[in-house]
Length: 154
Image (cartoon, rainbow, N blue to C red; front, side, top):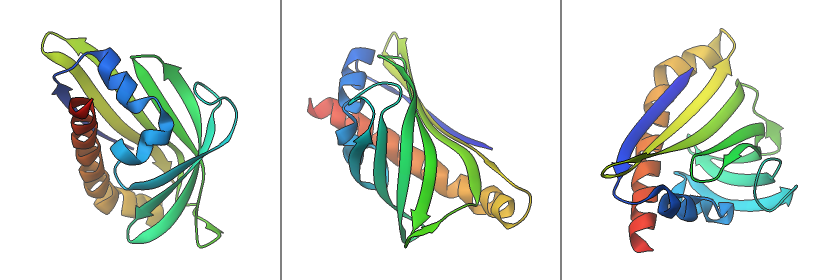
């Protein structure tokens, strides 16, 4: 499954990358993220491990991530390794990725943000299909707005 949103931000890919690539800033641009902690691997680049805390469907969720793709000024992909709430693993979806793509354009940078995931048939799939796309679409729209505001503030 996939949910995608995009917009052109009137700034260079370099400026957008500078705003999002220090991943300690994720709470400033990634919708719903309350905090981020570097937990292993390099400070930046492929293999970085981090833990996000996020409010998701009115529940505090911890998300352990690993950077799967790090292409300066082009693409950043965060792979969810584990999600938990209240100490219990959340197993509804698999292979969840948050990816940001940057493409230079005449008017600035086309920023495309997408969530991709797999859900087994059953309640997780139905929930993803009926509600997840709508909720996630709103998150992606908010993420784009936050990225643009952060870039403009620089």
